[in-house]
Image (cartoon, rainbow, N blue to C red; front, side, top):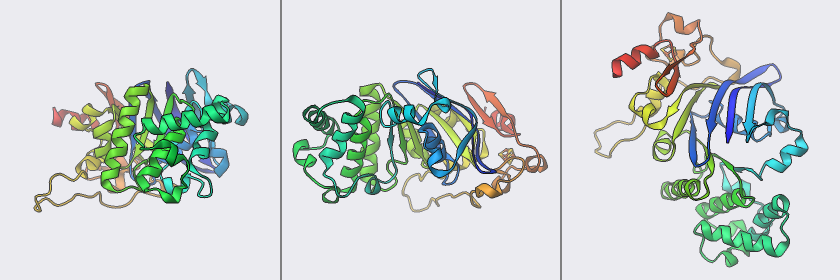
Length: 320
Ligand code: SF4
């Protein structure tokens, strides 16, 4: 349904994203995972055609949706697609909704714009979608303002807006970051159900490997604006070859026995003007050797997954 190949993005002379590739099909969930600053949201913006708004441009690669290269699309054509066949769920429901407008009209507008429904049919559709999202008393909720609802309820409304035009692809950019942990679990379960019920292709952007483990079929691990490992989730969790993937998995909290210390990753993600030469992870990598500081690693393929590390073969042999 959606296929991104070798995507590169620049802002002026700065290149924050390069060589990003992934594909997601109907009824499938792809996770894009990495720390803040790894390029996940920029990837989402590129797919949604939103880069020009922030002064960015695509420097190479393709973004294919249903056989069409979106990098060649005019802004007018993109406007039809965005929020229509490709829906976006943003990070923060508190800022995604218009505080001065009731919920009903905000969701109605999407169906009116993209499906050409009149006011009565759009409202019927809004109430139906709110019901699907397990929102009680949809008619009553349509008459409420965003400030009258909890964070979890607001995120459900944002999901309703993304679903209102019956999209084929949903991009969810850290959809649970602003929510407390119990509501997070509900929203993740809801998205999982929607993928199955509606045969959606879901791209789930997250910094949380445990969310990937629970919901995704495939995963792309990103670091410093590049994909560093990708493959089926089971395979990646079973045998992570890239030290960054291994470190992210090690950060998942396990048990509450009081004796196990939470693990972190030493150092910080480099800023876009400071991407290191060679392998971008080398200043933080416990396995780094001299070659890592000078030569960028290529991807090596292992089964259905691939890792960009000079020593992926060694990691593969050790974990066999
Ligand atoms: Fe670490 Fe070197 Fe592999 Fe990069 S190429 S992840 S620095 S071992």
